[in-house]
Image (cartoon, rainbow, N blue to C red; front, side, top):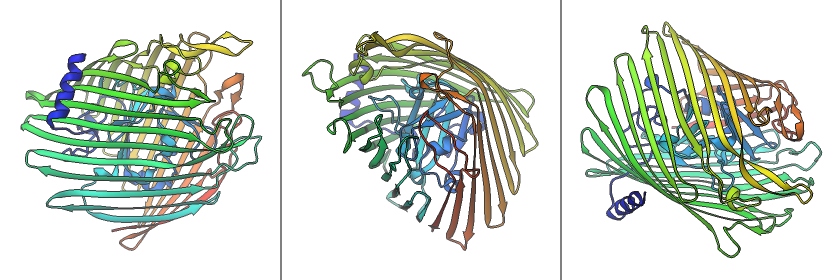
Length: 608
């Protein structure tokens, strides 16, 4: 794989054409994440969910996680209110088995292994694409349970000005605004969001409010320079999160999340598009007052280059081939102990190289996908991943799909060199199969039934080597198996829209026989939207069964309902309101941590 790195570095030096996933200048508004190229949603084989701008607009959600929890096959856990540590589980897989992208750029940190999705403001998002099932063949590590691609408003090519201001319970205040400009030289835009809340006590035994503030922005510019398209952008979120630690001491920490991208693109031939992505990602947490050691911090900085070539062939064939190189630098201090390979060695640097190949076919009644990737990781060496998928239109209204894939998750720098670190860790590896049937009845009704099975080997767990002194080591000791059934129904009427998804699953640790923590064996999500002239009225309902948590505790099942409303006031103004937790239910997403009670939120928006 050294040849891959040399080739990629030569491309960087020579200024070869490039583009990242998510918002190419000439891509139509199609599903991109499932295949790395634009594909019509009804031709995608893998299970895909789209959250569009309209759903984002009426949600008044403080972050992306509150939107994801109402989608089929997705669960979340959270240590309190907005800004607190949040985990996203897709089809019962671990939270670090969910790969999160922003405009196609990997967001997951190199220390915790998960993305700080609680810091992503919906005000900066145009749409979200969710692919359920393995995708390591296209994206590498973490794409075990699925991929969430957050596409910012840089995807818009129309000129507009917008602004919004609002607030609600817990002294919550928020404001956002943006402008998109277009002209003969290209297009550019800027979006800004601000959110601040006093919050509520995160722990059941605490009375200290846990506030949270977030200042985010996304800036971008796009132009054509003859045969080359140039696309640059920068997204970031910064702020402070307050919480209560294990001893119920009030603590605050500052966070920074950044994604920078430079995109160049060219089409040497009408059937060949060559793209390259040059990206930088930062994930940083700095402990503040109240911490055991205020000097504690973690930081990930990752530079990547991804050169992709897509060639369209005859009879619906398409070939995608690419190479990927990355250097990830992580640093940190945890309870006063530095994160490093050995004392005095400095920051941890990990190089990753990969080559991937994908072939797709779409024609008549058939679709097919074959994809493979070889990853060369500096720590554990080579890892192969793949996907095979097939879809067939059986009757014109009945569609059958089947798929299988192999995925992996690389150990993080904390697992390798932090407390209990083990440089000899192997990656976690999964094998997944799924099958589905989709039936359309007329133009308004759609029914879907699917089943999946995901077996994950070499799960990394902390093993006590001396229980008396609480010392131990991370080891590849566990394996999990998750089997499930998904049922879905969608109705599209002139003034009504109804969506229901039910998931029945058995997420289980095969080594111990125990249920995987914080995941239910049954979840039902429903969404109803009614349009009354200039007025939209929505109701979202989530019902979850009980879940196992740490220490043998059990979290009770719950029902959550959110009521939303949007009124058009003239041509440019909108009034929006939401009642969160309409039934005022007490429920826990993590043992000992509170969730928000009933709250009313409202905002006034201007769009021109």
